[in-house]
Image (cartoon, helix red, strand yellow):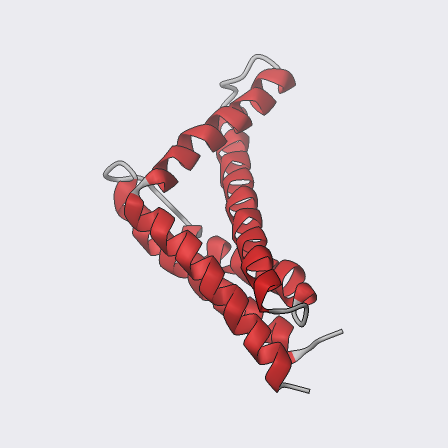
Length: 146
């Protein structure tokens, strides 16, 4: 059921996904075709905000830190999985894998490789700080809206 807290969570975590995407883009090698990178990450943020953070709103300000962090970790996981899966599909269409197991192994290798890009202080601070602020904001909205 739609609530103001779910909407607020979706908008906040969608914006967080967009901001972090803009911070990650310069870390890719020159000439990398990113396609719909920002849009997909924004959509993942919208979905995780609505489903993870918004559904847990109203449980208290201490819990807000927890569900904000959970929403951010879900955002990162799904973002890494989706983008790595797309790269694997592109590679498999070029017949770069000898079998399906090798392709699936490469998804996790790509997730680890791309996950290392998130380990810069600027991105970590943005993700963790944004998740805490997002949780507090969602909790605040849930207490103010009917």
